[in-house]
Every structure is written in structure tokens, then in C-alpha cells.
Image 1: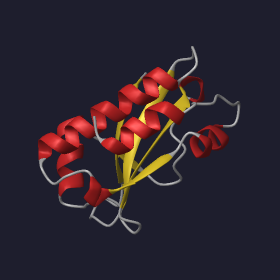
Image 2 (image 1 turned 60 degrees about the horizontal axis):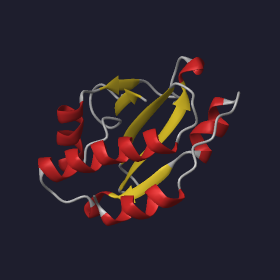
Image 3 (image 1 turned 30 degrees about the horizontal axis):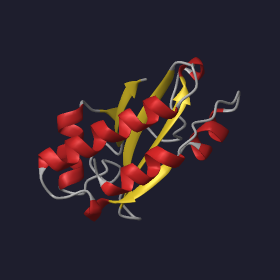
Image 4 (image 1 turned 90 degrees about the horizontal axis):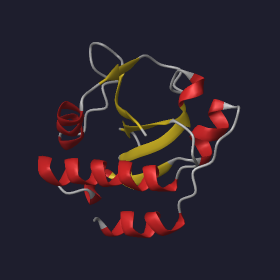
Length: 127
């Protein structure tokens, strides 16, 4: 497991709230994109391990784990929100990608926001 995730695993406590933005903010973690490694395998492993950390830290509530690239900050960001909200807390359109296409977009540093579609690339998984 990535060293940053080992530290996260010991301290993350996922919260649940009736307010989606409270959940999203309180449960968000960010990592420098260049710290993930530059191979597709290392990025995929990091994302899967991150999902596992959130799964183990969440209360007994169905949640959605999700990741995106903050291209301006150079960070991969992740969070979890209750599935009862039935949406993710973004004010822009999202392009929901499977794990491999999402990891490819991370490897080249493309968030999707500045592309012709102007939608944020997001990988999400139910946990």
C-alpha cells in the first residue's frame, strides 16, 4: 500500500450528514498527482487501495466513493457521500469513467474540464 494511504488508513473517519456538501468536504482527501507514480498499474493500485481505505472507515451506510483530478492544484481528490443523496456534489457536468480510462486521464494530467466536453472526469464506486 502507498505510504500516504497507510497513514490515511489509521486516521480516516468517514462521516455521514444530511447535507451532501458537509459529507463531501469532511470526507475529502487530496494527494499530489506526481506522488502516485507514473504507470497505469501504480495509479490503478493507488485508486483501489484508496477505495478500500474508505470502505473500511465508513459507518454502516451505503456510500459512493469518488475521485477526480483537480488539474489546477495538481491533486487527485477523493471523498465519499451517502447514496441517499442520489448525486455527487459537483456544480459542473461529470463524465463518469471506468477505472482504467480514469487512470489513463490521471496519467496524462487531464481532468476533462478543459476538454471539448467540459465535463469533469470522475471515477466512482459504491461502497
